[in-house]
Length: 409
Image (cartoon, rainbow, N blue to C red; front, side, top):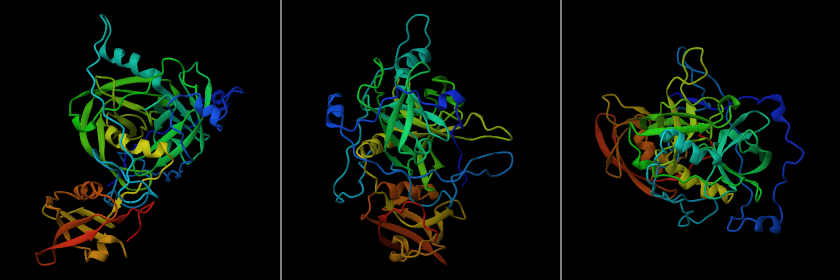
């Protein structure tokens, strides 16, 4: 399955490529860290390069991150549970950020709701630049932690951050990236965020419904803190991550988002983040918005950001298969099984049709990804398959740890 286009802009205007001489240095001493009371002390992160970009079928242009089909299992973690992290014992996890309740923002007389949301949220939205392009980010958790897309930081260790067109350039340190969810965390020096820039709260994206109003804030084509509005158009969409795996819990919106919006917040009517704008569909010769955009869900952000802020990498469960819709429309047919992977070791074979996992029916191939992603490496699952002439059997599979990039079967 092809993947939509990453919302990544090319070079900024020439003058903004040159950081000013007074750009603050990265914090490196206990004294500088101590000036921001309560801020966590982070260690170095892991940086993955963005995969190459290419286009697909005529008439509908999508920029892929290359590699195997999106049915490679599994994908980003889906809401609610805690994520195990690399180097920890299996039982250890990093706690998710909370989803805080909030009331709908009521505008003042003569003010639209979108304007009220913008006034509350936009001070926390930043532009992010690297040597190769520009994107967006936003404060989360505290005034030093910026969430953005992994493909925005693009394997770099430092980026240039700016709060608004009149703000100074700030050197931010990339603490960690997670290509499987297309998320990254940037740390700012103590005291560098302007007064009034407050972290944005994260909503429970499981509560989002089709038709809900949304607002997007970002920097399309370098136009600072642009607001667009729309609705949620779809839930549980599958998009391809920068490391070729599938992100299977993306939100679809018709709010206009364009290159440069990458990493910016998608907000609900309470001004809370429900997603991180990441990709768009494009059509014909246009590289811009055609009314179909995708955001990584806030529940994924809630889980991934705390680990990345600590410089941790994230372990995800791995089955080691490729699949496609089964003939007849029910189940997922295994097209390939990775040699030596968990599926092959358990006896699964190409041609098997997966009917259920742990008793939950598999209606399409993305259901496999969601089922696997509800587990951690080392968990055992029951996979019911139909083989050959119709024989139905159940295989016990001990899930492995997902490789950094998909292994070709």
